[in-house]
Image (cartoon, one colour):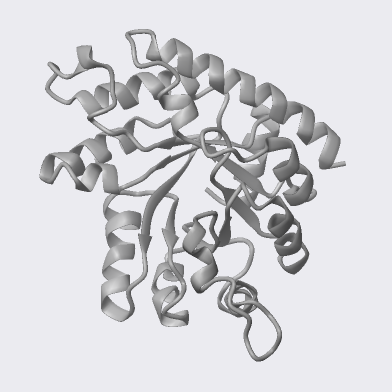
Length: 272
C-alpha cells in the first residue's frame, strides 16, 4: 500500500487508528481455549469487530513467536484474514545487518506479505537499507519511544548539540523518502512529537501508547498531524482486552468506534 492509498483509507474511514494485535493466550477469554487455534479465533473476531473503524493492524510478533511453530502459522492466518484495504505492520523490531537483515525482509515482505515492518536503526544504515529494497513496502524506524530506558541512548546529546534520536532522523532521510519510511514516536511524549514533526514534516508517524499506556489522543493529533494526516495511532490493550468475557468482540467494537469518533473530529480540526 503506497502513501496515497493509505491517505485515501484515512479519509474514507475518518480514522487513523491502528489496532495492535498483541494477543496473549493467557489473557484471551477462557471459552476460546478449547478451540484448535484460540489466538486466531480471538484475532478473527477482533478484526471483524474493528475493521470498519480502523485503517491498520499491527501484530506484535513476539506474542506469536512465543507459541513456536504454531504461533507463526497463527500469525500468517491472521495476516491473511485482515481486509486488503487495511495497512499491515509486523511489529518485529528487527535490527541486524547485511544478509541477516535481507532475510528478515524477505520473510516479512515476500513470504508473509506485510506492508511494513518495525526496525531498530541504532546499528546504522546497513541495518535498514535491506528492508528498503522492496518496492511498495515500508520501514517503520524506532526513533523516540516512551519507555523509561529511552533516555539511556535515544536522548543522549551528541557533539553536534543534537540528541541521538534527532541524528537518526536526519541520517534516515538520506536513506529513503517519506514514501517508504515511517517513524515510531511514543504517544506519552507529545512535546517530542511536535519537535520531530518539525524535523520530518512529511513522514507518517506510528504512535503507540494511546489508551492503556496513557497517551492523550488530542495532544498527539495536534502535535503530529500534517496535511495528509501523517499519523497512525496504535491502541492495543484498551481495544482487544476491553472485555475478558464472551462479549469481548462487542466491547472491542465499542471502544474502536469511540476512538474513531474522536479521530474524525481531530482530522477536521487539525489537517486544515
